[in-house]
Image (cartoon, rainbow, N blue to C red; front, side, top):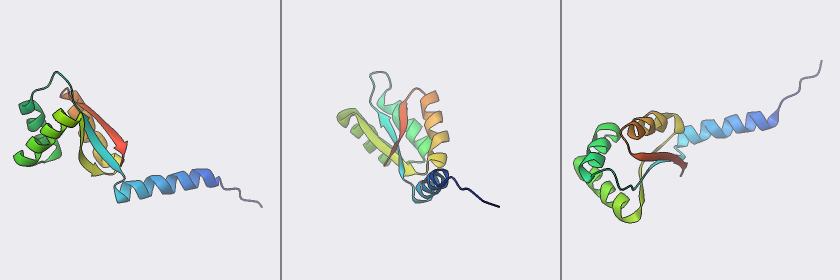
Length: 97
């Protein structure tokens, strides 16, 4: 009896598990011309569990730099938060860190 393994699939699964464990992703929010500072700050406090000071600093970075990585972690951890921020009108994506 012969057993064939698809090493590419196994390798990909190992990489995905390691990235989730190590936290190889960043939740990034991009600047836009629609949302106010207060709305962004409120969303960061509510969904990302930032302190008001952290949220204010991130909102300033978003405004002046065009984007800010507001959280780091695994893709599975960040996805529901990203979805919630998008539902609130923010331009949020998950990027590899």
